[in-house]
Image (tube, rainbow, N blue to C red; front, top):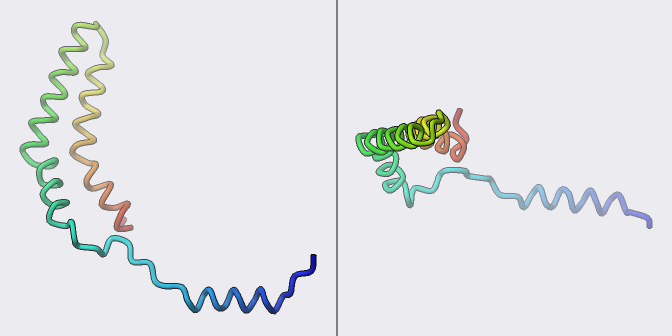
Length: 95
């Protein structure tokens, strides 16, 4: 099968000419909800949930005689606090 190089070049140039810009993270439709949820998770509600996860993990750790449940509780607390910042950086492409 023989490929026409001029046709491939023309198709490539046409696709580049018709390409639109990518605008990641510029939609502001849900920005108020995102801000509210971020403030909840990193504010007092997030601290209460984090403390509850730690205490439940501590209780389960005592019952099961294992430290793994405590580590899971601490992991939940860390994820709740830092996840909005990480997700925001990934979605908007900011470092």
